[in-house]
Image 1: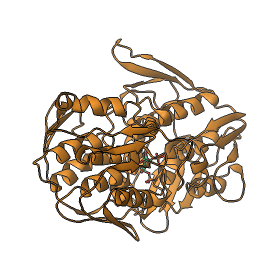
Image 2: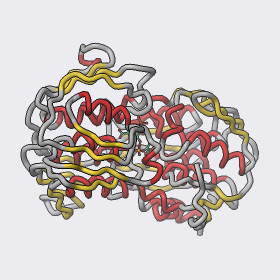
Image 3: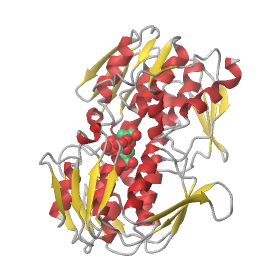
Length: 441
Ligand SMILES: O=C(O)C1=C[C@@H](OP(=O)(O)O)[C@@H](O)[C@H](O)C1
Ligand SMILES: C=C(OP(=O)(O)O)C(=O)O
C-alpha cells in the first residue's frame, strides 16, 4: 500500500450545510456490464447492452474483447433512446494483448475466454494487478487443458496460449480469496467442450451474491446451470456445454455505487432517491436497504426507485459483510460518524482488493482523529470527533467515496486523487456536488 507522490491532486470534499434532498441517477452496474459483455461476446448471435456502465473497468473489458476480435459498437439503442452497445461475436483471435488495469472482473473473467482464442493472449495491468490473487483461475484452466505461461507466482503478467477450444470438465478451485474465480470459470463454461463443473474447496467463499449474478445471467442467455441452491451438492456449480443467445439487456444501476449517496442521506438526516432501483436483483448493494436501516435510516421501494431517508441519528452496527465485501469502505465511513461502535466482520479478503482496504481505512480514518483497529477479518470502529486533513485513496475508487462521505460531516477533508473513482463511477465528483447543489448555495 503506497501513495504515489506524483499524484498530489487534492479534492476538497464538500461539507454538507444541511440535510440533502436529491434524486441521483446512478450509472450502470460494473459487475452486470462486464458479465454482459463477456456473455454477449461468447454468444452465437449479436446482442445489445442498454445503459451500460462507461468507466475504466468496463472500457478495459470492451477493449480486451475487441482485441480478441469481438465487435463492440457504441451508440444509441435500437429504439433510438439512451446509450447502447451492440456486441457482435466473432471467432476469438490471438495474438492479442489485454490490459486489465486493476479490474478484478477483467483479470479473472477473461483468461478462460482467451483459452478459446486461436493464438496467444498476453495479460498485463497496473502494478497492483500483479499482487491480486489469480492462482485459482490459472491452476483451474491448466487442469482443464489450457497452456499458460506465467512467472511461476500464479499471478499477472501472463500469457494464455489459446488453441481455439478447451476440454473443460470437472475442476476444484479454492476461491476463498475471490468469488471471481468461480464466476470466471462458469461464464465461459458453456463454450468448453465438456462444459465445466467447479467445486470450491477451502475456507468460506466470499461474495455469494456475485456468484448468483453469474448464474442468473448465464441462465438468461440460455445456459443450463446446476447450483447448490437448485438441489446440487454444496459448493459445486455445473454448466452444460451449449450455444448462448444474443439478448437485449438493460443494465441495472450500480447499487454499490449508490452507496455514497444513500450514506449522504443517513449522515445529513436528509433524503435521497435512486431511480430504477430494481425490485429484484442479485447485486450486493441491495443489502444496503437493510444495513443502512439498521444504522438509522429508513427506506421505501416504489415503482420509481428507492427513497432513502436519514433520521438524523447514525447508529453503529455489528455485521458480517462476507457476502457484500465491496460495501465495507462506505459502511466504515458511516460507522466512523455513528453514535456507537461498530464491528465489521468476514472481510479478510479485502486485504487483496484494489488496495489493502482494511489497512487503508484504518490509517485514513485514524489520521482524521478516528479510532479504528483491524481485526483478523475486519474492522472495529469506535466513533470519535474527527477533524479535517488529507484522505489518501491508494488508487481505490471506494476509498475516495468513503472519504467523501466523511467530508459531508467533517470540515476540511481533502481527497487525494478523487479521479480514481473513474474505475467504476467517472462522474462521481459531479454527481456528488449535484446532489448537494441547493443546500451548498
Ligand atoms: O464478480 C464481481 O463482479 C465482483 C465480485 C467481488 O469480488 P471478490 O469476491 O473478489 O470480493 C466484488 O468484491 C467485486 O467488486 C465484484
Ligand atoms: C473489489 C472491487 O473490484 P474488482 O472488480 O476490481 O475486484 C470493487 O469494486 O470493490
